[in-house]
Image 1 (tube, rainbow, N blue to C red):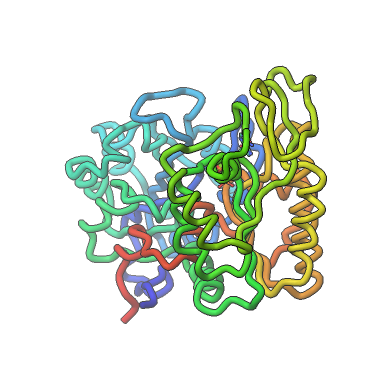
Image 2 (tube, rainbow, N blue to C red):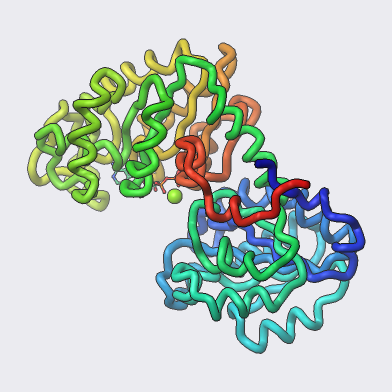
Length: 398
Ligand code: ADP
Ligand code: MG
């Protein structure tokens, strides 16, 4: 069922109204500097559509996983400054979630003004989807807009709970565009359809694979996700990251989908990220005191050949710790191979916070990927056919 979009709202429902826009400003920030702002730029159409029609815009997001504590490094203040540069006008910032001070700031907001709330996950009620917290957030606004595709798979207060209090709950343009591209890939992918999965959120990604694997012709696995599968095969993975909870499913999947799942045949390993001078290239087995931090050269060659003649590709999750040059090669090669596939006519979709940062680092251009999705886990789940709470809660198009 198609969802209502902000542009479906009559202007009378926007002018002078307070619009609560859930955005996903979970961008990489180091020492107060934002290294990748794609997720911020992509929300500009929605923000400007609302301000041009006289709405008072309240933006809210999470950043990282502070687990209910106030962590200054996870403050969204740098994002408010960047957003203000991008919009070319001041963007207010409030220190808190639902307290009185916030209420006062919002009551003082004039038409076409924009304010960003502090990191919602400083309150544990956010991820708990706590009803009173949801109610408090909902009391701040007249209409609800979801433009946070990357968080739509979470049933949190700001993505789900609070939306139920609004008669008007609609998708922003970012979410609308994501649904357009991803629905096509979900319902009618060109074949062979290759899914590439990596990264560090192992549980989320393997859970999403459970459905998606049925639709894909091939699944190439790398990054932190690979070791759970290798361990399930009885291969020594040293101290590499795993999710033991997913081991049984991985074992079954390797039997059931034999020939469909591809795993690394070699790795770049080191004792730790700090001791990276001990960097070595090993075959499939990793020595006890080592950890796998990137796919190795043989795996790269194999995966590139699997990417070459394909109908559609979806990639989420870096192949290694690409932030450190010693472990960036696998991810960079995959990024460039996907860009080449685009030139050869493949429908390429790449998503995920860190994955987007990785394609930038590999100097792949936006025009070399058909669709850059702001979602990683959310896109994987959507493509697997799961309902995303943050989407299903929105009004259906009339
Ligand atoms: P995305 O944001 O693209 O969805 P994730 O959040 O799941 O991806 O994971 C990204 C992180 O995974 C990166 O910061 C990267 O350093 C890390 N990573 C990739 N491979 C490994 C590995 N082998 N061991 C530890 N961390 C890894
Ligand atoms: Mg991430």
